[in-house]
Image 1 (spheres, rainbow, N blue to C red):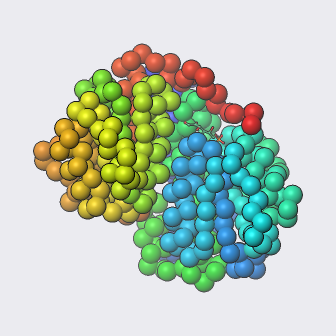
Image 2 (cartoon, helix red, strand yellow):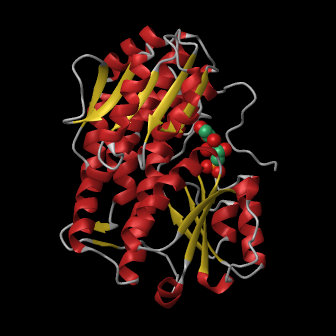
Length: 362
Ligand code: F6R
């Protein structure tokens, strides 16, 4: 049932082009620059009047929200915040009638996320659940549900659902922008074209799997691993580190690249590989300076870089031209990197110690 793959995780990484096609099927019209998300009953009048969209989630879903927040603010010009579901509290100054809480959960059963949504609901805040699981508690309890249609995910480490969550939230951002009269047709068309091209771009990364395996094997002995990226690269850096730590048990941390020099740089040595995201939407020129900082301390660097940001004298992988979705493509390299590091150490990749696929306790 693993379809010839050694682990569900690898199978699910390779299922991403299909999952992404399913997520956009019938929902976008790139020529008109429009999105049609079925089944959403949020009245236009409500979305027009919203002054804050709060995303709540855990783990990988939280990282997807950090990405989506930036797209929401950029496209719909509405204040968007992201909170760990386990830390969520209803603030006193907030107007419940002008707030939308968006819970994001692959399983739709994560106790922390359900609790946050219930807290919001109790004070009259409208809730939207974005999930992979039809009929889940989240889908049933929220005022609205939006499905990411990634198909079942069995490996404990979330992989294909991350990209699917981000792009469904991107489509939702365009919907909000449209209703609020903020939609920039050119920017919207570009994002929708990028969405259509994303499955093919992800496939091109998967076709590079052998090369990534070689690099992962070469660097697997690192003492610790750091991941850096700015703006949309920030959430991907966090996600890359989470993936590596949970399945390889290596120490891994992700940072917004500019924060390195404010502390973490003290940890950087010749034994700590640094993975850097240098693509559109991540201020690659500035991150390049941070790459130089760690290189001058002897750290091996692996870049995931778009055209024009690669350098011949370092190990790197190319990210195809895909605008604001380039960091999502870079993330697929990081998933494969984590997988191969863990595999080279013989870890129980689909069932890492101490973790469960669906965390139903608070
Ligand atoms: C990481 C991972 C977890 C989940 C988190 C939330 O690979 O799988 O961090 O992302 O437990 O789960 P869901 O999305 O089901 O709410």
